[in-house]
Image (tube, rainbow, N blue to C red; front, side, top):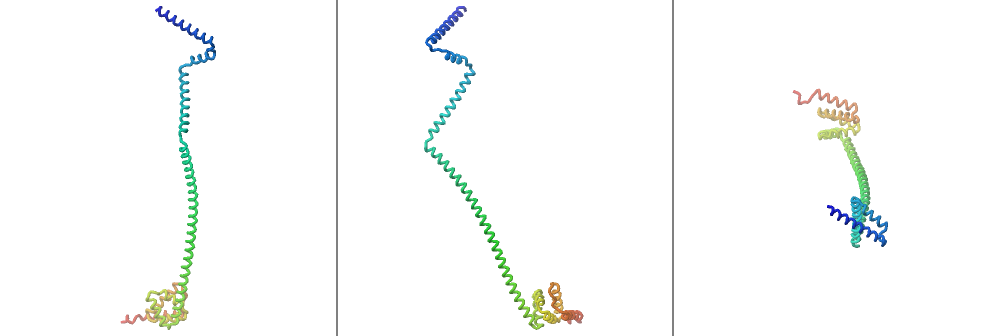
Length: 251
């Protein structure tokens, strides 16, 4: 045991002496100064955590530098034709955007034009409807005027007939379910002529028809076509017909 300790002490003394001789030689040859001593001291004084941290920072910096170098090398590796292609794609995209904006403007302008055309068509349609209505009114008025003229001619013709013939004509109108027309003819006639015609309704059926014509004239608001003489004549004949009755009904 003592021998081992003695040997270790001797080795330590030898190492220390060697270190001192080495340091002395370095100082003597001016290869070791205080700056280097300080750096060596700082290196020897670095702890393990600090060393790990420094290593991590160094690795991060190296990684960043490597990525920058890789990106730069990749950019340098892109051929000029590829760059031109990228620029061409960009220009094509800009042209597409420009065409889309132009299309939107044209679409808005076309929509406004269509709206104006639609309004114009609606106005033309309204004008056409007005013209058509005016034409229809003119045709109707013309037909009405012609009908009125024809009515007046027919009325004058009936008025110029003998009373018995005019009575027969009116009776025929009534039998054809044209009572309204017969009433209008009587209303348009001269009162004296109408009274003479009504006086010719002498049979019981004809007297009843004459009374109905008079009542229809009053109901429809036409002017009275009979005077006191014709009215009394019609009513007296109606009374006589009611008192005597039909000869066929007599026993």
